[in-house]
Length: 440
Image 1 (spheres, one colour):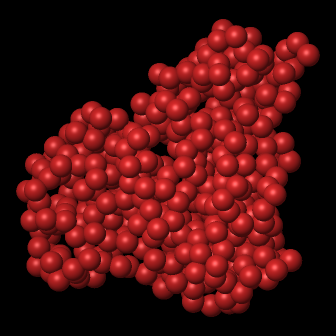
Image 2 (cartoon, rainbow, N blue to C red):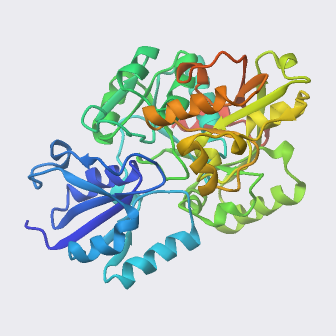
Image 3 (cartoon, rainbow, N blue to C red):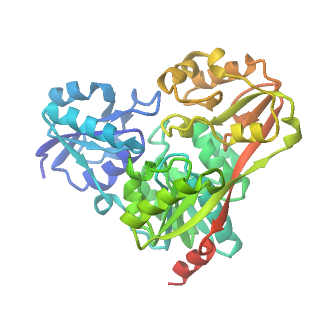
């Protein structure tokens, strides 16, 4: 069928590529003239390879900055703009929709029926209502539990293909060498390395049909580790959605987090020990209103600190997970909590000595507190991160990045590593819920 409609896909190197593979390749009447990219730096100068685009495309598909959207709509005579990324405030979604419509095109959101894959194995999907709610510690806890119970989990991570898309079509991370082989950014390492440290492997990439079928060969359970607050790429038999007790109300104000909340079989209200009763009650009220059949449990992220005595009385530089701080909207994270708990005397504010694109991040995201986001999407940015750390004057680095900074930055400063581990507090034991689903 020849193309009838000219389209753009607005994305961030993840959901956009998946939607292309699952929807647009099956519907050639919708011709994609280009992708736009935002949220993630250094990715808009690439193109989507013709080898992945398929026979209806005779050249690579260009990727443009999203700021060019009105001009692109006019240049390509666009009929439809498909929004395909996540963790957006509702006003951002509708401002974008208004911009698209004012430029003459229609604004579209694809749903699960058009984009979810079906597995031959039972599927447990972990999603969230916001970035940084704690879904990855929970997913790793489930993977470890499944392995201890004699299962072989095939964990599939939401995409982060920030390099060569053809080489990243189907990635299987089983050893440290795989992280080097795929030239992973800091953000990619933050998601993959914690699995490797537990003796578990993980899959990711661009072509999730191929990724799923590859994982199924060696696994008896598929485990979806979601990204941001996106919904699962694979149709789940058990959908677990994590809500953040420290951001009450966000579960009904961010796209597509509310989608996950409404679809969930289990809602995990996380970080409850640091929240007020009123905050927890508000989230429970929203769950009751939007998804009254969901099972609700409460949980915490427990701090695990290597050698906490080193922190006491020291002048520290706290380094945290980048996405949680940036578009996730958090001011601080695990590292800052550990520094306060174990008596650091001085918190260095990186805004006073940040270099290059690291300094620019503070201007773009002024909500951040006296912490350093672990940004490293390019070799230049990793070098700027190293220079910022080494020029800080800190006595100690508190490293709260899930991957551990020693793999990607060079410093002679002493480092204490901080991690989060999932701990259920109330409700039906999650392992019991999982086993009941697998028995079915």
